[in-house]
Length: 134
Image 1 (cartoon, rainbow, N blue to C red):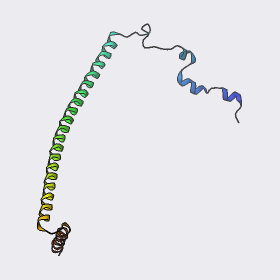
Image 2: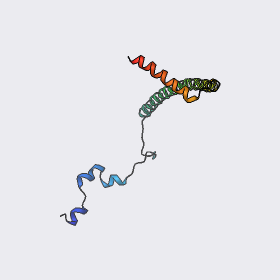
Image 3: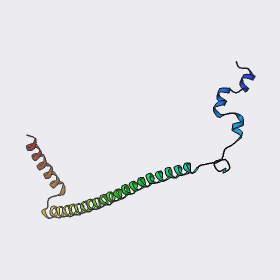
Image 4: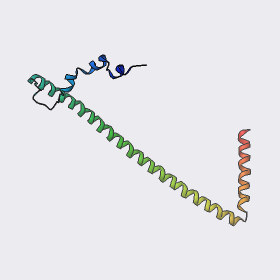
């Protein structure tokens, strides 16, 4: 078991990571102009780094703009393709409904019931299928 005196003491090696207590009490603010003493060369170097970073950022923004424009073109093309596909399916649906209506009219005029037509269709389909697999 640890005694109370060991628990309340700090490990000196850990405290040294943060500097002495005197260093901790004197806070440094980047906005305190009295402690900043930059030479002209340091300011010029910082300005140059800032310009380089701005140029790199500008190039990345241009690349993102180009990418977004290409994505927009691709999306517009896909939307046109989907609209064309939708129109094609709509036309096919109309044709199938028309064909079904004509088939029902033909079945009524022939005097043969709809179930008989279905039975004939199934028999013909099975005959073709049997010929196809043999």
